[in-house]
Image (cartoon, rainbow, N blue to C red):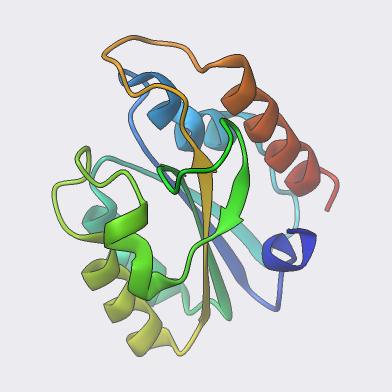
Length: 150
């Protein structure tokens, strides 16, 4: 997993999700807990509208884009998994996103030629409530801690 999260040149981390849908808030949690101090690392919280950051991502011209989102891939709650972009619409929790992630980030990948990595965190609950499950929070803390150590 560390290899997937490892920066490569100009690296853009994009978090996705809604804090109002339990574990779908894993992306916003990571976004609020990571502080990059290096100019070659950048973080964007796209919330539930990933298409809103696509142009910013393209304009920044990253070498690598890392997407972090809650997902449903039949893993254990809080499990981290790299999800191929081609499988993202089947595996990720896209009901909170207004436009298919695969379309949005295929465009970003094509326009920037960046390596694209999608990190899914297996959700335990997507109920309409605030707060992460303990499992998702541990995963979000692990991701945040790794990024903050860079």
